[in-house]
Image 1 (tube, rainbow, N blue to C red):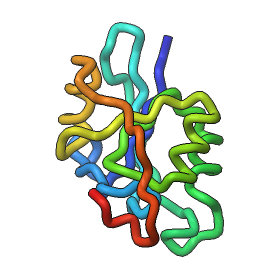
Image 2: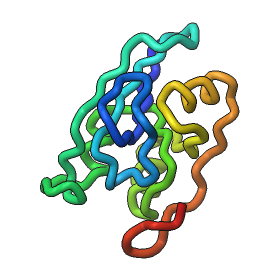
Image 3: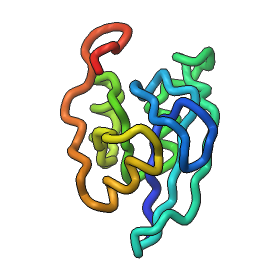
Length: 126
């Protein structure tokens, strides 16, 4: 069974893309497909076009439509976190600098759930 893992990133550098510290303000989102054997099958990087980046969509709505089973993020607002949890998406706290770093920790089950969203404007709580 393939898992779809979404990770907000700062740049478009495939598996070496740097993790963004805040979900909604990430310039890009990486969608990582993982095989049932715990291997990365594919990494796709897409530009973030949500309202925080000059677009019109709410970040959590556009992400839910991608059907990830897991989101790995440095942090996010309370509303987004609540929306993802309500949609049945596991949200984990990023622990590493690149996709490669956090995926290694994911495969080792060393990422904790993200339990609290940022509660203030600007979201500079990381």
